[in-house]
Image (tube, rainbow, N blue to C red):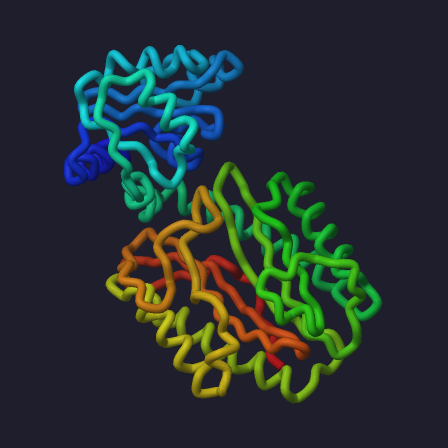
Length: 348
């Protein structure tokens, strides 16, 4: 089934006769239009219309096979009004602002119904082309990390490491997928410790979390590396997180739930006395967004299917001491898994 066919089936189950798609990644997924932030899509039973403005006339024609209307609000809403008259129209509750919802209500003679996750559920399983794009983004990130790894040493600022990673991605033709995390020494206790002016010191563990965005698709990988000789406690924590990460990756397969994988990794860290130090979920889906479904968190009932791409990223964070996170990007296959992130994990 095509994306539109799957989406119309989901709309039927949700009881809506039309769907106003406004989330940028969802607009792109439904229409093929790569500037999703400047477009909207109206999905109907027998048609789908891409709305964008005159800056994108040529681009929209080249990228999308949908019916196209080149207009700005309020003309956009006026055109759609005739198409949705009398219908029950779903809108994306997690993307549409209150102001834009009021605009729709002012122009449309239709019942507007909030929906959640209709397009996102269709996007969970990646097409072969999407998998190839994610694979390419990760391969590029692996190459850049290998180039930058030698400069991660005592006397270098975290900011300089982050800058080298960002420049490497851009020189290779990618965008920086998200704010680069470089957290060394005690700053490693911050799961989202973006790079600072701190100078890396001998004995530090340095957590580096970064990704590329290539042709709209993301990669995501974390490595924690040692500078000099870390303390015995830091080595203990590192090896516990590595054990949890590798066990969870090895358990990835169709039919397993995100909650199952989280429980496996969390149980290992608990046995090492680090349960409370694991302060976040095990992972998440990756695609047009860096964070998307499925969720690998405690209690998640999201079931993995072939073609889903997820991160597996347990961590342990000790305030005043430091932290460790190790993350791989993993494709769920028909028989198990494939690790897309090829950067070696250090053995301490």
